Image 1 (cartoon, rainbow over the protein chains, first blue to last red):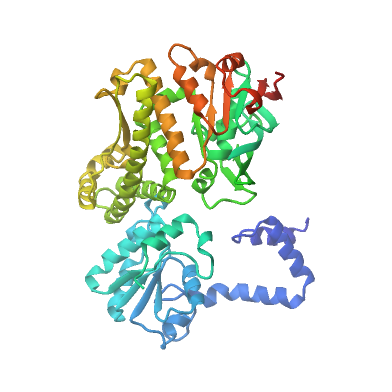
Image 2 (cartoon, each protein chain N blue to C red; image 1 turned 90 degrees about the vertical axis):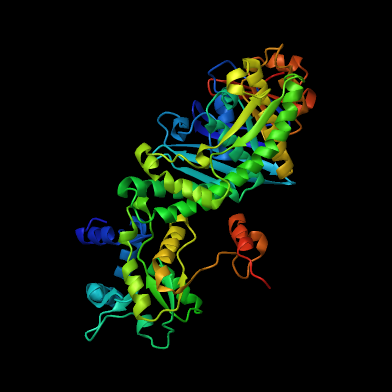
Length: 202
Length: 367
């Protein structure tokens, strides 16, 4: 593709995660041959994206910019949610995964990253103070720490537990175990080990 | 269980090798420097994702090639599976596949086809530093307590995170407690798995040594760790060693310092054993490794024996010969003197397949 315009768009698209140069070219050709409306709409949405969407001021989830008052995400703005229950996650992706399950009736707090000195992330790089303030001011009674079951996820969970200790809030950690609906024989041995360790009384 | 096909590409001086070994004794002969050991190294690579010669896998790639790879077809329980490992020259990344699919982890890959190697450098198990003996324990843990491998990975990661926090932010770093908590829980799990592996090994090895060396000599094999037994004691010790760990840029306490202590008649083998006794110790440990893996997995591990000719000085290593005669699984053996193997009456008849390696090319030897 020789056109400088085409080259520019391909190189921009291929900076997106999971998109290589070939996929970027496919996108470009598709946008050129599909209905014109698609390219126009996409362009318009992208130009205003960063003005319209910001991190939620309370939890870090994606939120629409508000002209009046604080910019809050749907979940923080939803007053049917139980404000006494707060789920702490590492990333917005994790929040979305939990939301898809549909069984979380409380609200969220997105840390943005996990504790990892090797990757240059220390405790002071995490919004711990903001979390403590949130717990105190919103009358949170229970915290569910839903960081991933990696070493960094566990260390972050331990840090959250220690920092929130003085607030007296109840803290639990999500369980880890075998997936629903599958046969036990297909569970990998490590997950199976965790499932046995975290067994519950019938 | 046995390997029914081996395909190697660009491994050291072996540009391209494809052959079908026999299910029992495979004798690979050739002069020194022709590629016999590299052939075993290639087989070991596709079974374990490692080399027994080096920890820098890029060294294995034939000069000028972008990728080296090894593929095995393994027959087991009436079926067969294919497992392969590729190494990239750029970056040295390993790519493991089982039947074309990516395994969940390298440990899950390495556990598929149990394999035990015995080569001349292995005398370091008895004479050398603790690293080789820890690796022996961990190979046993892989096959006897697979899930504990994750504990070891987690322990190492937590240890490195804590050390980084200590070195960049000092002893006042506020997250040291969290990392140490994880080091303690994972570290104790590692110790438990290794202690169990050591107990399994020691019983067989001590018995084998009694037979191999001399009935009057007693070998003792025991696990040694500087990790305290209780969580609290371990945690206190770690917290107390922050300053020293920071200054020395390494962690003083932990399973990464473990050892398997070898004693002959109550004295450290490294100090008192003769060359012949060291070899007997290594042979005993290897016999134990094979036995313990066999007992745990219910299949006989594939045995790789490198450079048997150098070991076969008759007076002292009758033991190796009788040991070989006892092997009932698949064996790959390299030697410069195939006639010697013959004269010892090993794996005669249709059980034995002979191959020859010359300048990196393998051929079926004419009997």
